[in-house]
Length: 438
Image 1: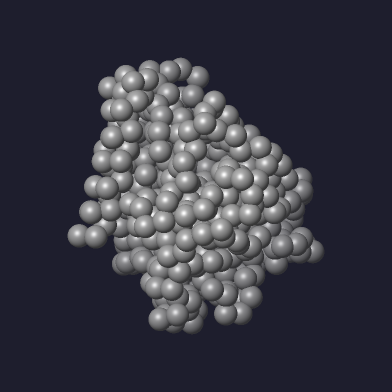
Image 2 (image 1 turned 120 degrees about the vertical axis):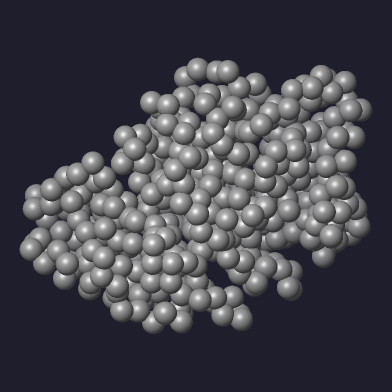
């Protein structure tokens, strides 16, 4: 009931602004069924980046994509100039929607974005470096392309998108030119929920990260998710429930807040159809929010708790005993002479790794393209990393394992749809048709 009330407040706020602003009212007569953002991979940091326009006048803002991030945060300390920025006042509907429990009462400078009195505040965090701070909640216009699922369409605007002002130091560790992080998590002010509220489309989004230098995509809204040569990936997804971690996994949060990240219920791991012996209690989320399996775009490779990592690496090495090992290359622990590994449509010819989900017949199969990393022309390494003992999350499925797999997050139904490797369908995440417009 409370979430419906907050959504109604937010939706009515958006509609009020649209209808009282003539230029926006005209644009609002077109209601998109979905929105699309291009996603590129930064070669030096291995972060996934996107760009959309914000502010008045509009400025392109480069952002690191954070799949489980709480919301959009942007550096407001350097060069944030906009005639349409508005602080979210304490005890307002916007503050209630954001679940803020803090209020900035004294700002020791003249009012500006990120420094206003009587403004509610949140805790923006850099999830790459695990650092956080406090920052004002504000709102401003953002602009991005619509889509029909086949090609990009008209550019549309959300006049009052809520975001948090971060500090310049939070950009440390992010890719060059990045001004903040685009949080796609399940919070009410995460980008998926705000976009669906603004345009009344399904509270779903899909992400498809490219393994090449070409653009991958994030599509906010329902399918089709069409990739050249005309393959609608939404028709061939496998589904598994999304699990709510009751304890926030952010650097800073208010007491009692659940995590906004996306967890799934991995029950076992198989390599070449044989179960790996694991301490299965680590696969469950305990009362303190430890354990379980989440999906992340800020971890470049899948990270496993030490005992799980050792068991998986040992089982994999035994299964490929005929392939010569070579010296390990950090951060990986098992590397091989690639001259002795064949090639298939789905990458290097190595045993498949299955993440078994709600039943033995439902599993996420990881093929060689996603399990192996080419660290040089003649060395391939198993692309999993040791996360240490008692990490916050036992299994973090990282970016390399997500590439050229389409994932659909249905927030309303709390369900994940996944395609497994698109190479089997003779397409890739780089095959969205950005070259023509609807």
